[in-house]
Image (cartoon, rainbow, N blue to C red; front, side):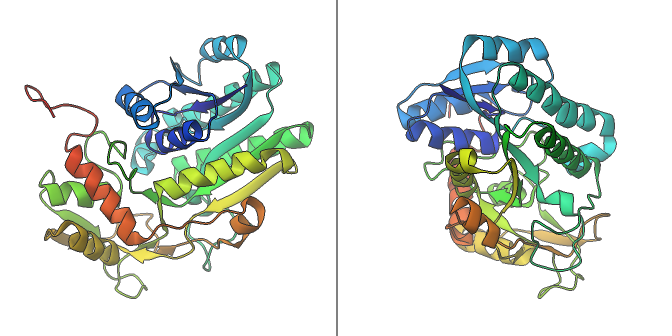
Length: 343
């Protein structure tokens, strides 16, 4: 039996795939490489000294998926494949709704066709929008403010209806907060294409000199230092959360929704100062106007994850910064080699 990991060459998918192989699972990575690199697969196999099956394909392509399910006995699907940029989703909403929502519908149809009804789905804390209080619990109202978050909520609603129609499905929906960091080896990590959308890789690239300065969007929020506060979680803690969900998937009652974070928020200045200490670099920054749609603070209540998955995040902000900096230094161009040079 196999675990199928869609989007397994990407940032979170690659770290989860590494843990799956270390745990002895038979893994198939299914990825269209649109926002990832096959180099991550090579490095995972080298780190674990184990092989996986890699298939290039798209979850929106039914034929691609049917070939996988025809050829292999799939026990559970961990579904990472999807588009993830909030800004891009505002510019290209149809692209996001088709890829994230329709892609999942086609995946579930093929799973049902081959009697595979065990699914772990990557959702997002963006489904909550601007919460009226903190910390955020799974029962809070859902008000996503952008097409990316709305596409994730659409999928959640689809999965709820699916379980209602057929109670033999076992589905875990994991709502991530803010993944950061990299594997401790520095061999796999976050490899954004172009200018990073997320804070941590932007800080790391600024420390390396790839970006001229960090832009801080607003320092007048009602937070301790005026900058936005977020629940940053180490990607390896997040990957371990997926394995915890996999361990519990058969005992789940239909569909379970779980927030995955650390339970505390860090401000932009806290993250910046910690990264400067770790990297021993002074990182230039400029405070500019708030971005439309940004909220003051966002962090989760971790009690339900502890209760249902028997899991909690362990790594500190310092470790998040150390591992990010190690990855950035070892891979200044990400998984790509600069022209005319050998890394």
